[in-house]
Length: 435
Image 1 (cartoon, rainbow, N blue to C red):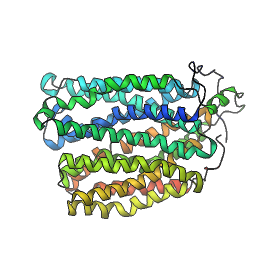
Image 2: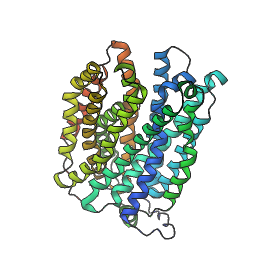
Image 3: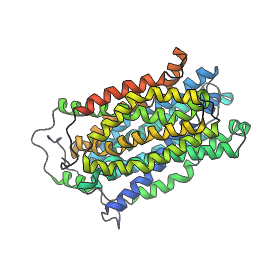
Image 4: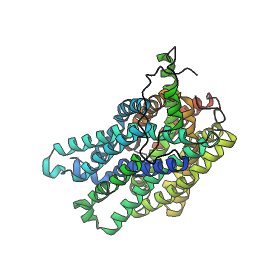
């Protein structure tokens, strides 16, 4: 595979005592992931309250506006991916990861401190969107930098397992968000939540930010990056057409991943309380149990992908969502049973885990080291911005336009078909050396 022309820039020296150790690298990156993605995702679990506090209008328009603001954070991700990814490719993965955690913490604490629409009028939603943009810029650089860092730190025969653990840490962040919001809604009354307690999950970012900063200051650079920086620049740079082709593959690959993730996890508590008859506490409990299954099973599927290959696990997820999303969502709506709904959520999360376990290594193996974080971040972030970040908005809009709560499944099915076709054309890279 062609390599991108690169100016030889020495990576930042590892901090004192930061000798390379794959397990320590992985642990530090995972803890940072949990803290950073908690900050980004907690918004979705409080969308209904934020709709009332920051947007003026009826219930549906307020919820649409709240989810649109959630999606705006994703619109900034491709730009963040391009800027911070470039930093990761030039100055090192460690430098990029230190930058992203500051940006995410600033945005989250900012949301927790914002005055509401009742206090400052139209400036409230403007400031909310601004904070989501700050978070989005950080998140755009986070995923590609952290994924490249983790996979490049792995032994060659454990890239899937390490990548799966890294992705499990992001699912753990979603779980942490769900659990904390569930605890807060249990402790405080509905009136207290609406008045001020909704701020608590955001302001926790002020407590956890220093922990993430400390963890990321004590990382060593990855061997793959160090080796790539030491190599002479390529005589012929990668043609722009090849870079676009690779990013397009990552884009199509990511569609079902991001749609299933954000519909089945971030949007699900809102859907279950509004259409399936669950209380907010039941919906968050069901979501949390399913997330535990996702967190525990994702590394196992990553380990399995190191042995049988990436493609079988990726394709089975696409097939399941294409064929079973509609009938199982209908069962959710008809049963209105807590245990039935939780079983269906667990089922879906197992197949999200099959994709999430194999996907990080697959995408890293698609790109050359010298341009990996830039191209990976842009391709992934574009798909996430378009299809994932606005998934709750699109689901709410589809239901409103069709009058049918089953309508979001059409979106899931289309995503599964598109990604399935793209993945079918991938070559198997599980046992190849990183380029």
